[in-house]
Image (cartoon, rainbow, N blue to C red):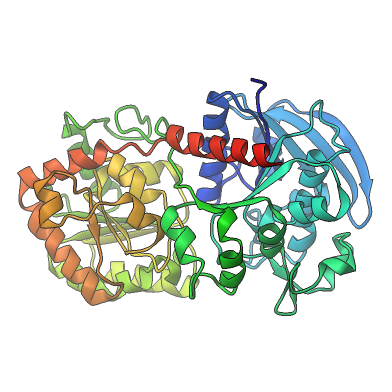
Length: 485
């Protein structure tokens, strides 16, 4: 059978550029599909950081586009050898700040043009005028930054690749004033209730949901949640209308990058058969973060964007009582300034018991996963989540809210699940400070039972969260889609 050609369009990919879980998925899923024989190519903006780290690049096309001007298409490879295409527009992508925000923390004012160009280039590569040696069979778009591509194909291209639109987080929709329609080179007839129009504005994500052939999201539970309020964020009616083409496929994790037995970022490696190295990581983490060196104090951890969506306001509400219960606390992340200040103030009030590192540090995130005993993810919504899977792999038991992918990946430590040795973490009954305190009282009790805790750690570390099975699901979806065309 001839290999399936896939163009995977994304706004970030690990290890070249990362702000969140999308980069991890973009780095891992195409690679897993390639191992199944898929001819996968990634499409990404040529950010300055990407150009600095992408290695040797070759120009394969140059265009002068209305509204955008001079655009180059560069070809290279990711560090793992996967083919890479870069949309090079110096004015759009080579600037200080992250891919979406300036140094002031606000969205770039020209984001509609920046990601409209990315979508337009994805459509061109997937269409009948594609300059590639073989046009892709499937164009896989990810989140709002590439979601206009199916609309470009619908309006301008009769013969084109099949399209798949993946929602990683429906809360971010790429909504802009309708005045950008002309600048995006889209026809006026696209702007209507059953097209791009969304409460008088233009929605990139809605375009992808309307015009793509298939829609996926990153966990089965989230696929159900987004068809209702409040997690539909105004698009629940459209998603219910298209439910026959909507599928929830759980994300995986890179089990080579996240492997406590071989993780070179750790102070000591370990595995499920011998967790002595985990204790050494805990002591080193306590020392590094200025916490009291206490082997028997359960250490809680958070690695997260600091925002109410992540439930960190609830953590802040409960933290003084948790410290009184004997817990230590460490947090790595950045986000809303007021919540950052509140968490910092709480740690200053509890020296030796709590520590916060504002910012992002990949090495420290691995060390926290290895050194902590418990990982907190009390999210108000969580499409999939990756850290609860990293945590289980590292024998760090997660405490999660009952939502999205958290429900799909964590087995609550009920009496029955403990007896059957299936428990791998703790699920909150609801999201508030009282429920968090009561659940952590349950955690504390089990933590003191070293034999039961060790059984849970080993059960968690035995879970298979790798990409192989997920890639099989995506490949089956692609083949089913192509068979129906």
